[in-house]
Length: 555
Image (cartoon, rainbow, N blue to C red):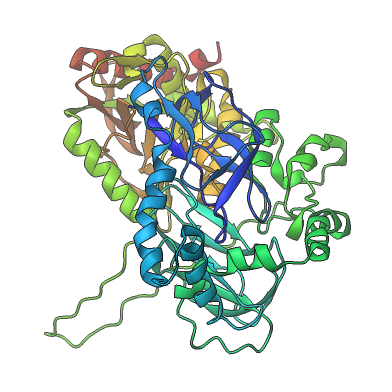
């Protein structure tokens, strides 16, 4: 079903936006995480990502045009889908917003005789409650579907000096964990939402202003005023200085090498780097805090690259152990569910209760795989895991059994002509599934490198939406935890997921003799709407042939 994408509110003071550049055109295929357009706000020009996949069916605001927040920016849906009913009411959002706001405006200023006065009255009233120079920063709406956000990490503390463009915090939305920049300079006077807390969009996130200002009486209800006030009252000289500031920053900021610490990168730069195969850890960022921007990727040359950091990422801090209580006493503790946990719960419940699933289990002889891996890893600078071998075998088996590489929709079954395998990775807060794109075209060592890179990003919460989108099949491995056999819930919209257990030594029969062998159990969970039992069984037989004879995967 087609979905309307509205003009987003990309800053806490934004009321309208101008489309500077469209990076996609009508008819283009859109993936979750693609950059749709560059949008000029009242503060800066920012990239806007798609949070839905499909075809770009309609562009509602052309390049250079300005429209209010929530106006129809674009429509994404199925190719060829009829969107006439949506277009017939395309002017409705703005009109409805004005109509809904009018009563509130009249209540706030009953003496006003015109709509303009009614709009100006509450702003003036609110602004009078704020000390001079104080700016209220509210919880931003970082995606078109976001209604609340959780502060994952504060990167600044109360009392810190804030520059325009500084990263204030990392905020968990319903889609991903995203960095939130400051559009104002001053001192961070107050933090309104603590780490781990969840609040609705427009809640008081922080207060920025002159150092030493008393903000104890500010509640956040005054947040509607600063945008219009600052826009109307700012002298022309200030505007020129503001316009010149980004350029000055770019010139003054030293190019910072990424040394394995925090990596700042714009979504567009990340996308271009992915397309060009550039390792972001080898790129020097010229933006604020060493932030990597578009021009850094475009100007990057391998000869100028710095060696990638080899230092291992710091170990994740373990959760504090629960305090012991005296024997015989009942004790409980409630831990608030974060956005990732909520999303995992929702998606797994949807999969479990909508897909009629079944599971097939098979045992693999791993003797040849063990010998082959030892030979491969004897080559200098080569490291291949058994999981990499299973991923490669799965990709090759999917090529022979396209029915498993499908997606169920109510009216059609989608046959994916490409193969991209999602790899389940356990992180501190739950489970994420980064995707190894076009897996069947990669060698074993390339798969190993890609999985290692994605897993590292996952554990450091650096995965982009694009790196978690587009899987056609999923592999989940708990063998490293000693689990010998298990079943997984399908990672929709995939039609199947492979559960990989540990390699165990046990007596086996070979050539009529009982000998010690190495075996591994794998379980394929399938959506019966797209994969019949015989098809799933044939897929496992092909997978078994590849894993038990790894040399056949090199042909």
